[in-house]
Image 1 (spheres, rainbow, N blue to C red):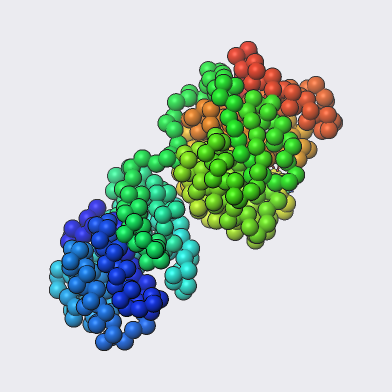
Image 2 (cartoon, rainbow, N blue to C red):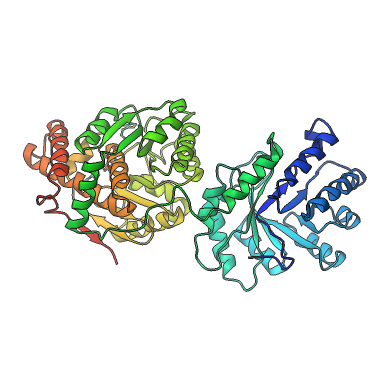
Length: 520
Ligand SMILES: Nc1ncnc2c1ncn2[C@@H]1O[C@H](COP(=O)(O)OP(=O)(O)OP(=O)(O)O)[C@@H](O)[C@H]1O
Ligand SMILES: Cc1ncsc1CCO
């Protein structure tokens, strides 16, 4: 979408204060270098603390640079400077009075952008016929400490969806906490090919202003922004699920490929997780070392991020892992263990979810309700790491799982007596398993590895999850028959045996007894 002035909003640089540079010369040199990249499409001059005269003097110098680079100059929040310097645009904070005044005083050809943080503000900007909307903060940012809470990539997309329903809605540039690490993800979340729903560009401050090589930084941002294929994007749907054929195909591929799964998991479930992966004919490597993440992302087929025994450094470690595995195009399974139980768990969960593409979010009903947040309607109940039994019907829960999958453009696996899997389009219920699994610590955590291995081998994300989980739970049923209902201790060992046999004999009636239903 282009504004009426045909300005390209794609890489929109907002300056940091001249006072944050050693000298005005150093600042101007920095801008000139950035502009020499040919990647910046708009430059907004933002100075909150200068007098009008000092702002105007600086704006005149910057205008020379932007004119030379043929980049439109936008003045932040100062109508006087905008008029005097003859800038191409004015950007004002959310303020309809300011907008009306500026519109009257500025030539028709000067474009005026407005900031919006919420859907209501964005709709109001559209009604005012602003020339563009600066939507944000998208991600948390320290550049503007007084900013409203971030709307995150999914929130931006939900606002864009509403705007797209209006006739002639303004183009939108995202702002706030955007950098090289999250640009591709934001682009993928917002521009998913549905007609009319587009984010038109990314506005950045520190990604270019704090870079020692602002021209290179600008080029990299433009390249990331213009990407239309994404290393992390899920493979196309190839499996017809449920079917014995899909079951045999995925398990056969697991056996062939022996996926190597990096487990960044809690201290309680290390052994059961590693043993289940070996039994599943995959390979585990257990590591929580930050300095190993990059190397492991290159050799592993996927990673499991499990916050069961988290600490204050977990969110930084796991967001680093999301970035590395996204860049490598590998599977990321996130298990927000006990997500609703404490503030640390809620905050860590949120940060990881927003940091990049998660291939599969896996959790029990309480954890998924926490991830769902406002979609769940009421505050999710969670006392420890186990699920609090939900009063909602399977249909209501399936609806929520579907909504979470849609919101995060991912696959969600909710475990319990009835498991629910959804990729936002297809939703299944799975009714295999045994109550003995509830008496086995790590039954859910170890499943994270099974899902990572299944997806790494099977491709089709949700279809492979359904197969992996069905094989796992059918094996549990068989084990329960062997040990009886009152032997959770012996159960685990026999369950591991049965998982091993399930993959080994994938072709031989292993799918018998599967209770998987694709919901309409
Ligand atoms: N009552 C039940 N009947 C059948 N299967 C069950 C039952 N409860 C759990 N399961 C199965 O057990 C596995 C773990 O699910 P659960 O929801 O207990 O995970 P969790 O709470 O994350 O576990 P943990 O934190 O102990 O690892 C899944 O495969 C699920 O299908
Ligand atoms: C019991 C327990 N506590 C933290 S993690 C964990 C393993 C099951 O999730």
